[in-house]
Image (cartoon, protein in one colour):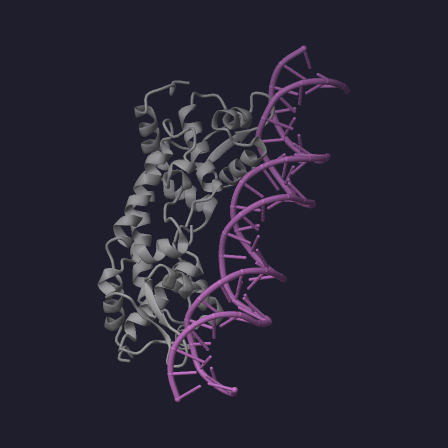
Length: 144
Length: 144
DNA sequence: ATAATATCATACAAATTCACTAGGAAAATA
DNA sequence: TATTTTCCTAGTGAATTTGTATGATATTAT
């Protein structure tokens, strides 16, 4: 019942981009050094974000990545679901493919639904803008 | 971000025991057949519940398992944490051992805390008695 | 044109976890 | 003593996680 590094890193990458969104593109190397994440692994994760259109890339010198939209337009759920897959606590809630044949008689399903709703309530409410605000409230070197 | 079969099965085992709590012990074989779970795997899971004192066992013919307490005395969280380990979405919240050195500047931690609280709110509120009630509401063969 | 700088695309791999299976020991009952 | 049950531990195939490694491709600067 853990969020993997992929999802956690994706969130930190997006937050890092939001924090350093000053017109210029940000290189993978910069992010990886600031965040203490292997740059090659980071490349793979940011590539997912890129293919989904969450970030925009430019190649070559002075290249790098930047956010495609404003921070408030990304919910945490968007970013986590993209990188982690479904956030449901059990597979049988995701789609028809994964439903088991005890669906109708299964009381635990009601519980899983409640947990799922509670998680959704959080991840679909908060956005990158909220993370940015929290980050800034923590005080330190958030300018440039 | 999934609950494993261990936790899900544990919950269903406890619910099965609650549903068939009529004085006599319930054999592993019965539960495994009703629930469609491999009996050898079920043995391992129920053994965890036994060691924690959640169920009581008797050996030999007419032996089996029964609940140690009343259904309302087991929260879902107790059962899931016992079998799954911590339900926190990230390890850095669990204890001091797993804390990372970005603890103070990490805005995402605030988010993980919110998700953690939301999950706790559910799993520490509902009990086996609630599951039992939901099961009975579903209509069918809940007697014996 | 060439060299340098960046992203982009794959392939590989070590470690861990998951979900069981297998075999037998120990205890209780008939 | 035979049968029935739990109890204990080891093994195992498959998938997932968390990266590394290598090189191709595009862009810019000289």
